[in-house]
Amino acid sequence: MSGFLTREERRRLKPAETAAFPGPIPTQIVSSDEYLPEPQTRAQREVEARLKAFGAKMARRLGITRRDFFKTSAGMAAAFVAMNEVYGALFDATAAEASTPELADERAAALGDQFIFDCHTHFLRDDTRLVAFARMRAAVGEAGWNPQLGTRPQTLEDLKFNNYYKELYLDSDTKVALISSAPSDIARDWFLTNDMMAAARERVNRAAGSRRMLAHAVFTPGQPQWLEKLDHALTLRPDSMKGYTIGDNTHKDLSRYPWLMDDEKVTYPGYERFDRAGVRIVCVHKGLFPPSVEKQFPRLRPYVDVHDVGKAARDWPQFNFVIYHSGYRHTGSVHAPDVAMAQLERTGRVEWVNDLAEIPGKYGVSNVYGDLGQLFAYSIVSHPRLAAFMMGTLIKGLGVDHVVWGTDALWTGSPQWQIEGLRRLEIPEDMQRRHGFAPLGPADGPVKRAIFGGNSARLYHYPAHVGPWRADRFAAHKQQYLAAGQSRSNLRYGYVAV
Ligand SMILES: [Zn+2]
Image 1: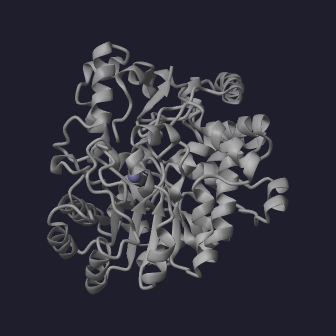
Image 2: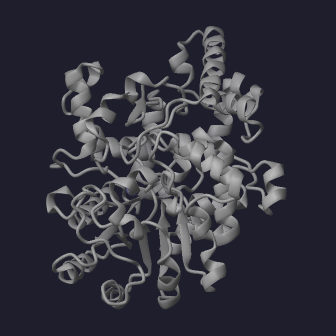
Image 3: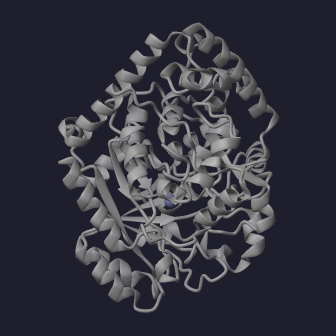
């Protein structure tokens, strides 16, 4: 939610709700306005064409609409089959599953109980004012492109709590979510204040009757009175802390207080307070700063890569540092995914994911973790091989017990398509051999179990083995919801290139 898209750029966008082909997984990148989405590639067009043809055939056979077919588990499988046909066999999905709804439903039901802990989620405060996302939606409504926006001017509600509940806890297999935020130099423009996050956690867990939500508190090194504010935040008993070294990510033009993780003078006094309060997990937003954004805000460039992670991790062994987005950079220009892919082919590296993965080896530390927010959503669709490479890189460098599941929902709609993506993704054999990557294995195998939830359960002392989510009020509601024939919404909130 940075708002760096120009009006010209915004004019070239259409609302994803109407423009994108409503398949079970997006065939175009969905933008959260943190970057400009890529125009659909030839390969993506190919996937879409195959999927449409297959969907039409299945819909006729089942006597339902194509749109309804894509809401089924078989429809979800069909998308991965189509991607396999275009990109090579990267996904565990068969034509049999895609064309046999019973088979697909059985698989979905068998995996439905899987423990999924999403350590990176957002909704917006009720009194949020014109953040970029709201401005974009309003402009689209005014332009009359989207009838839904036009007749329902409060579309921003879809990015607030009620829809968060629906898309996270009902429409996806997510069991536990950590609510995050982003700070701003303008107090009113925080996604959520620290008090709001703590209140949301309280509200959700009381409603559920079990611990379904954990909460960040945001810290802002260098801002006036930041240590006093931090003292207050710590009284809220956050499950972990979250910081943005870029300073104000929402208003990059205004950002006055960028900071570094290893700045002894500015940042360490905050760490001392974390330590005294018993905080053990420090989450830091890194990456999502493509060359096009660097050109606009060169003064922020020193703060967005991961060069400051290693020393901080070495100096503070009592903390686990979770690097959000794993430092993934290439999201900004129209050629970004191709740039990342070309960079990978040319150098065998992806900025700044490889740099992050090298930190344990370089600094002799074992307290650095990688989150998959945006990194996964972005690559799994545009370049599945890039997604496979980054998964292999992070697991090899940080350890399979140091990669954690985060989706940055709700910016890209319900996270179920990302969950299915990782369940089915495998690193191609040639890539495994070339880079020494271990296979990811089956959907419910040890590697994916660890990434989806085991690692965060360990970090946050969550009793996943007890499974408190199975018998709470959210579980009962979800059962009713599914029994009532509610189907997954394939809407994604964002914009796609025209
Ligand atoms: Zn985020």
